[in-house]
Image (tube, rainbow, N blue to C red; front, side, top):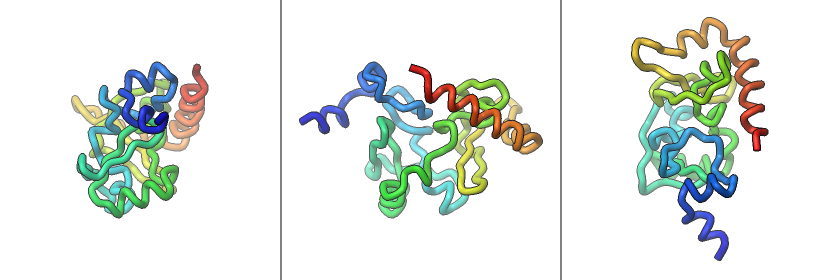
Length: 150
């Protein structure tokens, strides 16, 4: 059963096969510390998902706070996917790097989710808001380059 093998394969094996996405995942393939991607849109807040309500999409494991959220994601994953794989939007725009995020520091704008680094007195959402148009255009270009690397 090839499908069950692909779902059971470790993130390292998926990465070696070129299947692990550019998503911000931990060593076990868990997306952004297990936060529910749908909750950002429906509740306008960061909500931890449950290990019992999870699914794997493009090699990353997403957790959800409810089966309703899981079902919404499953029907339209593209609608709930974070920009830049869930990496810091500011860092992607300012210098084209994948930087970890604070899942509680986010922005939903024009139906898109942006996550940001926020630690050590450096809240990059504040900097993003000052130059959002320029940074978003730059981040889009930089992310396109990541997506096309072999």
